[in-house]
Image (cartoon, rainbow, N blue to C red; front, side, top):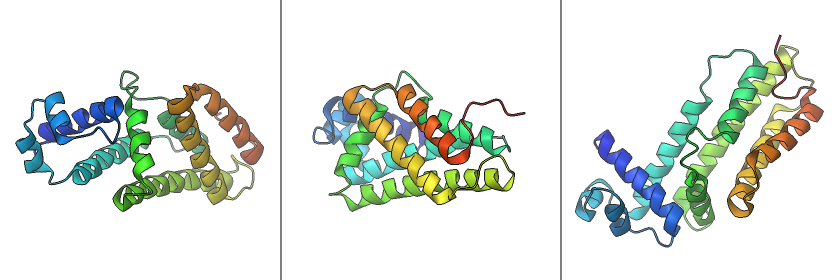
Length: 195
């Protein structure tokens, strides 16, 4: 599929999910929101689930790209991870978390969605665990179980985004609580100057 065509369909899907939710997402609405016809969208995606799987592929790919950092210091890598999670790359695309919450709500009923969110969770936890293990090895962090810290961080970030979407709670407040919690577990608070 042409990249521009795919991007247009994915972007239109995001807008429809934000405006109408999962139940209101139809190929017709996506076509109306883009310059594509329903036939053209069906040419690229046989089902709505296939389209949403591509949407999740795009999400995971973009998030992986945001996590890429040239930093080697575990503290800088951890700070870059938190920046990627708590600071939207495109603040104008504020509805994106709503679209994700819509799909997460379908995960108990759609095995494909559940698998994709498990992939995303596994990837996030692996990145965090590696950073923590490296930081312990280098003496930057106090001794702690990297897998437990990874589980804590992913749970808190998922909760922070759910609270942002459902309660309009600012993400920076949740990040501050997470940073204080990390200081208790690792003896280091993100954002401290790295010498």
